[in-house]
Image 1: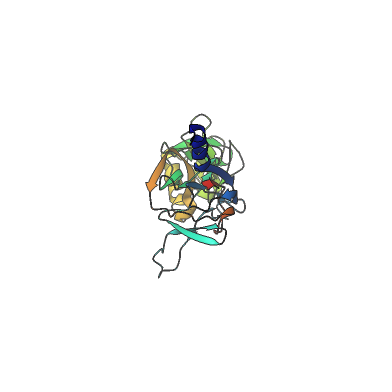
Image 2: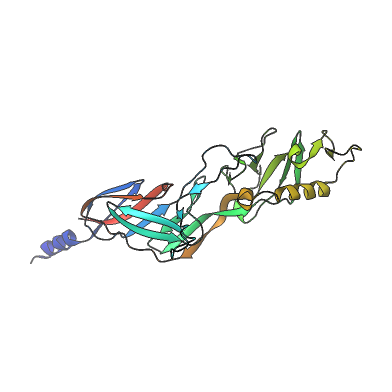
Length: 274
């Protein structure tokens, strides 16, 4: 055999790796072997505008297993469907979230779940500023990084200052801090543009910042835990090793979807092409 023919035969027999992405993820000319790699990205949605009187749960990719008799009770199920074949993955901690452009994802190649978002409870460190009928507190950091898409159960996602909305908002200069605001009247307080008073205080004795913070903390602690949570971006992603099953594919065209209440924002695959 001539060397030229040998090289051509080796090339023709070489494994060709191709890639595809999207949701649902569709790829053609599959050899029918398990995927070389896949990444499945989270997404978070909130159906409506939340406020303290109307908390709205944030839903993400992964359905909580509530059957107490199941071995996966308390975990989040992610059934990945390739054509008509389903492979179940169970997340130990939380579903796959997405805040702004930062999404948690499953990394099959490295057998890890990568978290780019984090959940933290609101807390009051100090009064940041007083404007009209709104009190603003902060900050929460530096464990996470903020963009303009902070998610919260009870406050709007917001990208700046506001005089008339209760909101979580981004610090104007720091990427690692945000503040939150609440109407004075929710705390039983009034503000005259200079001082803060208890609404029921006939003497109108001005309150110190520490007294205001104490009152606000008591109000905050009346809220359910889930309503005090905010989702922000991790400064450095965290990775957790896990066991991820290989996804079976079929020769020809394959369609990958996920049978959860909230669909992923994206799926990326690498596969062997025929």
